[in-house]
Image (cartoon, rainbow, N blue to C red):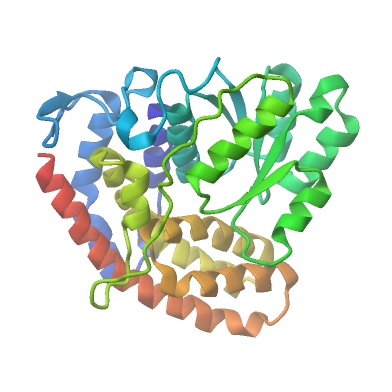
Length: 346
């Protein structure tokens, strides 16, 4: 987990702030000191006071050493009869962070591949019980990777259970995943209870005895908003389960990353680089979901679809403008929430 967070913050440090507007750059600058503090946490060189438990912890995540609250998660240490090895094909670092947290909670061991080709190579050389496959990745996407696994890998490898994960909101998304050869499908953001039950079902069907024990549903999102807030952190709070350091890392990542995403959307549209425009929009959707910025999710989805099809591209500039305007205001709210958490954990 710590390695994945370190990758995130190393990527953040390379962002070209010169591309940002004055207002955006100002917001980014105000959190730079906070990011250094978080980096110290990752490296174990700083300690944080947990105000709820009254204890001091020395890292953002303890991996296998961390004891999760069984009453909150619904998973006990006896939930799984033996360790399940999961291959996760996912190119986005922030999504890897969230999935790894959930796999640890399930008692599973997760290994990550950054694209479909990497997943195939790992599958050939590793020993996995199930695959979680993001369907839209660089180099080789999930659809192609699944087809290669089903048609060309030898023996039991071509029958390994595969659960497709996609952020597409199109009505035929699940059918396309199943047609490609996936055994099952979950949308992004997934319901953690649904994912856990499906993983256990398919591992058991593949010959591994897994004790079925459901997880409390943490993904019942409320549509209620206070006032005219542009963010809804209910989903993030459910994911974090009171882990302030996890929330701090997610909020900080969005504040650093969102302005660069907007700049990239503008740049790729100006250059008519439809492939990269689609990829940037696709990767931005989960970040909007984690922050609960629902008012422009459809706009970003439309940017992705129009860029992919190279149709109605004249609509894209106005969609980018709306996304930028909403994100600038949402970032102010996110910065306030981040300040509260940092003050609480000083």
